[in-house]
Image 1: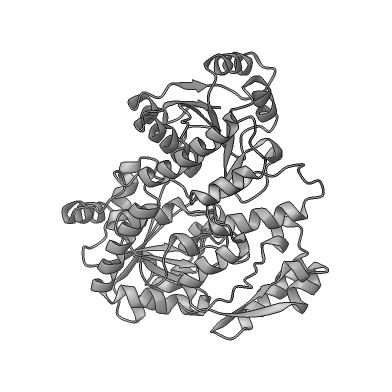
Image 2 (image 1 turned 180 degrees about the horizontal axis):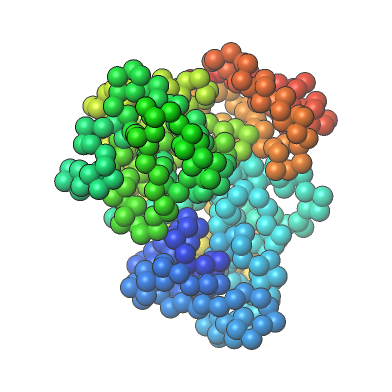
Length: 476
């Protein structure tokens, strides 16, 4: 099989966010596999040290076509002539992609890592769009259908999760665990709930606070650490009763991966309770890699890949109803053996599915397959999909069915006619009165069910969300 030897990774920057960490993992992973890997970033940051240590040449500079720096990098890239270009959307300027494609060989492979399950404006120029989960594939397909102007040609959708460095995120020693806790005034015998995430309200939920109070009332020595919470969460902590407030710790954002691993390792349970879910959720994979079980909330209305990253009942719990959250946490908080067993299984699961070596091998197989097909002047447009299916890189069943089967493993008993809410969520123009009514219905539905809608039969948002409701059986 023809190999793509030269691979260019394009990323918006080299700070310590999830996109930046993962794009760096890809570029260094390509290099460790013997490829000529180079990276172009709009701005520098702490991750540059990793690229330098791995010997990955890096261009740093703005990506605005027409500027002197951008034109200079484009000339150097054109002279180098990569076999494949891997774009980390969506922060890469859309105008850069057609310009870059026009200056490179027609046989150059163009793929993207799509972050939000949202079609890129340059999707017709791509050979493949790498989605982070089956949920993202489904969302991409639905949003593509809803676009007013559809692309003349669509890329093949391939599920490729984020790459996690298992050699950087691993269980900590008992001594380091104790030292970290002592440094933050937390006793060694505490059941420590931990939360790490972004600082806006959608990723930080104050329901964790009454959860701690209720656990303590039940005799559990529960503490909570929240890293980089929202201002709303911080305010809620300040208003807590004096009996609960001493057991809450708020920490600033942790950028150093080593310090982040130490924080994960000090937790007994990783808490992921948010209004908005994840298109992947690096913190979920990283905490599991550190041997920590996860309790997460299913969020079918907004990004729900956490149902695929966490294996319900095996590496943690995926909770379908708010009212079941306490039961899931209490179950783990009062059973150390179960925590340890789930933590060990979580690390095994991450290493076998999301470890950088596993993900890079899949990506290189995809890139090499596409590269080989593009070298043949007689290849047909539909040959890409056929070949990817043949080599096990692409399922030949629909994304909706594939997602249903994945989620059925988590929840048990899901029918294959699975549908989601994302098409009508608040960020895409759903009227507030409709969203409020949906929330009201979800709060009042029976414990073992929740509502979902079938977008394919929808005439309008009100009809689909209220008139076409389907009951799906879930469990914690």
